[in-house]
Amino acid sequence: MKYLLIILVCYSCCGTKGNSPAAANTAMDSSVKPTTATSNTPADNQAPIALYFGSMASGPIGDDFLKTWLIKFRQDENVNITAEKFSACGKEGEYIIVINKTGFNVSKETAFNTGLRKLIDDEVKRAKTVSASSGSVEIRENPKVEEYTYCRLGSKKWL
Image (cartoon, rainbow, N blue to C red; front, side, top):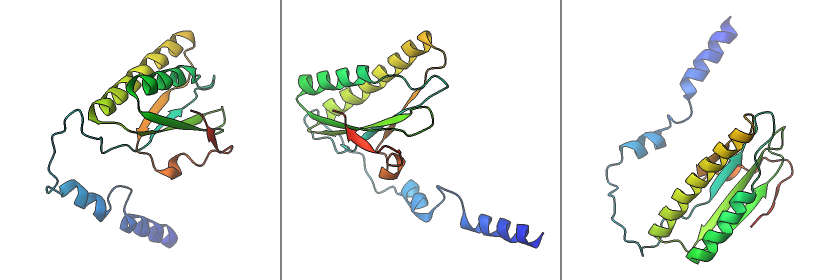
């Protein structure tokens, strides 16, 4: 019984994820002022985007639609887009595609993010009409490296 009490006390003292002093300071920092950007201003956030292709019994959906769209966007907008595919991230063939982008201004960044979200939503809806147990796709902006390097087969250049 005393061991249970010690464990509970330690757990409550350590806190939980997101309650760190750094997180509290960030939330209360009012010194950051929003800036207005023009369409020619280089985008500040050119961090990678990770797409998590999940599974619900019948495996994840394919990724050919995404490669086609990325190649077309890269050619039309004259930007640099590369991608890596991390394989064997789960028991049913889940995988992660990490998209790196450079040469984006604010308007191209907005068009890319809007188009990508619409593309993913439309493809997931289409896949669900074919098979209700099709996997989903989760978009994570600016992921930490630890969030996608755990895959058993590692990565390979995808685009």
